[in-house]
Image (tube, rainbow over all chains, first blue to last red; front, side, top):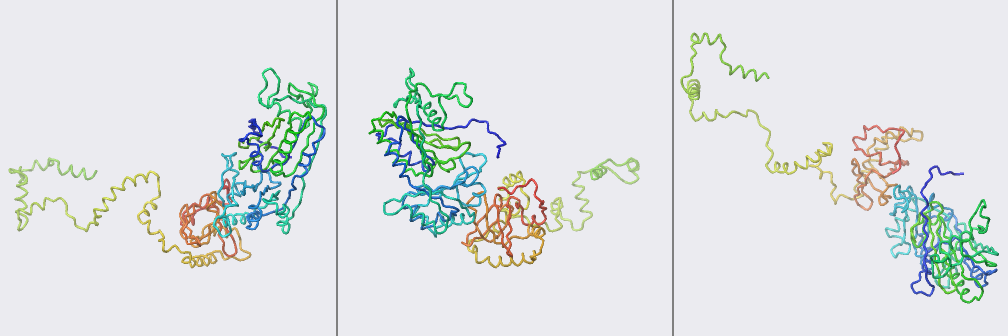
Length: 367
Length: 243
């Protein structure tokens, strides 16, 4: 058991950004938002009003790429010339250090844009010899530093000064970590598995597939929302977006919404106004999911919503980021603090409108 | 005080016993101006006295021994222009050695044509010999004793590497120490570049005789000469090796 001796009494400064737009809008940011959230741990789909997951969506879930876990990779391997030429530059590579806690250990990530991001401790930083920035979240006591190395630069080749310096730094500090890896080649010529053969010779590799889970609800109370109004209706015709989001969180955590008012554990009840639905399905997949998969999944849900003549008023697609990832969206720094949450939810309506909820914890830059 | 008394004695009126016997001694008041009397007095007593020599006699001083040479006027001017600067420096309480050395500063500068790594390899070899003689490392030698000796050793000529620093751009720098100041090492690297590395907030490592010594720069901020006599408190209490 570990106990924190000094308790921070300030309330956590979690942030929730809600925006309303349409998929048909040219300026809509939905695609950018998905693509910039590089590391997804869990994707969850909630569809009320249908007892089974539609087959077209289920097929998309099944089609999610496998990911690899490679153990004890020294960082010098990541700046290997062959590796950069064959994989980093020819496709989108997602790598994230595994079992490294961002507030305790050094954490590393390779973004598909070709950046290697190191979030290192003060002691490591002093020995590494690469210039970085102190972490945004503890400015007073500089405990963590963020170093960025651009792997795709033309001048980042053996023999050049910068390359040799980075290499020497990695060799001096002997940094190594387990990495989660997923790679999507640019063309169709190469197979995604070829990256495995690159590592297989010298490191222990494991292939994992995403774990899927389905749960069904019956007789669930749904809050009523209006696709064009984020705020609560004047005469109580619909709920506000925040109330709805709270309710979704309660449902996905499995909290019952119709307990007695004096119930010991939870007195949460579904916000008014609400309506009863006979069935609802919640499907989640857990692992290391590339944003590309989330994109196709989103498209599948949209086409289902367009075609389907069933009763479902909306569908909610949520993607949770890794709590220990050094970045949340794009290159924005991420920290753990109390929960390390960074997630987004698309509430997709039938009329191609959507609401986007982006939620981050205290140690995070507002998306 | 004594002088004063003497003066007083000199200008006092004559003592009473003398003034009483004035007439017996043949003393009388001057009847002419004083300088006229002096002139005639000198005339009477000095042979070949010329009146124009009188002017020279009036000069109140005569330099008998050789006076120290006067500074040239240019130097004087320089002094006056720098006097303000010096006064300012005194406020900051810089030790007099530094002030003095300001004039000869350029003596210690290494000209660019001498900044060659190969020129200093013999110096490094010499240092290796010196450290060998000093420490006399044997497999059984006492490490504690060796540490104390190493603290007082001269480091000019040692091959040094910065292995940790608060400023990342110093990390990994390797070279031979040419000069050691109070707060900096001047190091020549293999690329023939003279670099100045501050001692504070860095950890250095020196290799010799198959051993590696780590120097925590924060506790090493003394001049070479003073280091020899400085007491390093071991074990270090209240002192941190954190940068």
